Image 1 (tube, helix red, strand yellow):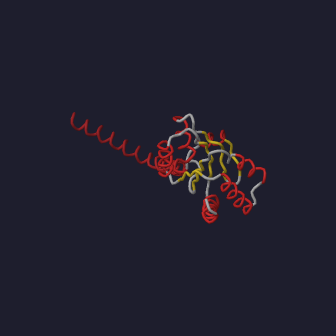
Image 2 (cartoon, rainbow, N blue to C red):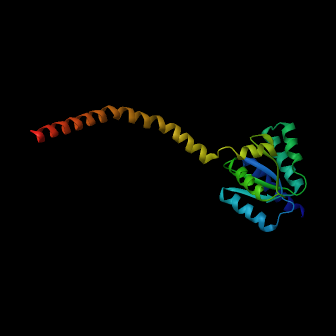
Image 3 (cartoon, rainbow, N blue to C red):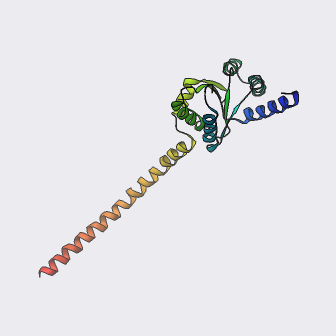
Length: 186
């Protein structure tokens, strides 16, 4: 790579890391191009991206972004240690949980794929932590649970308020049947 191409790549990586909700590093050695393409396709569906990066450029980008944010040096160093060997960087701008779910599902079917760690909200998360993140509810699931929690009390209130009138209606209907039965017998 010549210097201009490297500089352009570095600027692109800095932009990606600076706007990312989560950046996950994974080892893809031993996977076929078709498998990596399938993974990229699945990640694109949820609004994430995956790219094989040059380790030196990735380290420079992370260092530049986190020095500007005031990231903790020890946490940054732990994340930089994951950027070794062949590295696939997965970046999500929107939902930090969704890509971890895709990666966990992909890793179950591919023994050679391994998540090294991730950067989430200014902190390093190791591979076990990424696996734990994949078991958490995603953004859409969280909104659905929140909506259910908000609407449930209102639904119960409507039931409670409508129950006395329903009892009155049932009582009147029973009385009507009773009167209708007496007049038919007379």
